[in-house]
Length: 363
Image 1: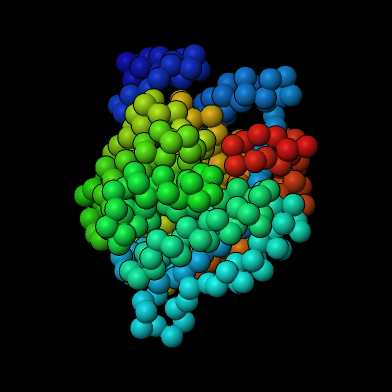
Image 2: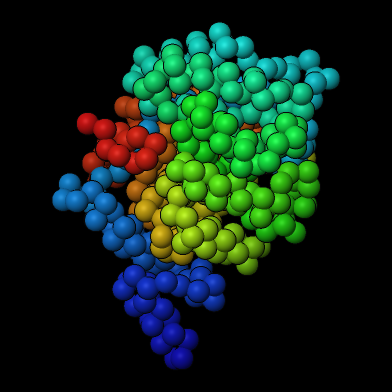
């Protein structure tokens, strides 16, 4: 009886929009999935009702962009990654400016507004490679925002260039960087990071890049990859650190979570179910009360679960993603065009809208 009363009280606090604690999150996690989903959907409606000012809180957004992985050479050898290569591998590469232009020409032809520019941690590329690339894209494709370089990449740049982290970010912004993706977050708990990616930057350094970027006026997304060696407490700590940083800076535009994809990787784990994915996304929507947007991850979960995720706290369907190389290297190969995405959104009962990097509606 006491447990039922406590659950009722917690549910009421969620419905009233009150902030929950880690202990609350553990209790919510144990709710039946449909109940947790309903609470997350309530939080979604509350978050978006004000944001779209009378246009309706049943809008679901998506973006037309393209992933461009400028190199697959990487020296951090993450156990969960099937994409990276060393310079000794025959299939390693660094894209030329001409190759990148071909990809961006295709993106521009489809009305794309963002390029997600990410690569491995190449040990030999100098700062001029990056600054020249940024300047070139900004000048040739001014309509396309450069959403580029994850926090681990920036920490890598700081080491390779022998330059303070803030100075690196400042130079990239001056050259044309428009926003930063939340890649490389995995789980922001160092005992977990030490097991899955011991050579990658730690949690504090990941968050420091975001604080610097937000302080310079750049927005960023935030991510979580779960379903490997972490436990529920680790996931909640990850959400807590993101929430605290958002309280401090207000610079995160959205949260995206996805499950570990194991094929072709050295890190082995039991597959995570779609129900577990929906449970964690719903919990994140409730916990991250200062995040306006939660993005569905159809790229890893597939179109149907991506669609169902709209009932579990997500208000954004992510990206058309004309190109994706990292997750697909681990065995996931789902693909959707803009028409597919709009159909899935409508079939779920929502109104589709294209958006910008900053979640502005594009008519």
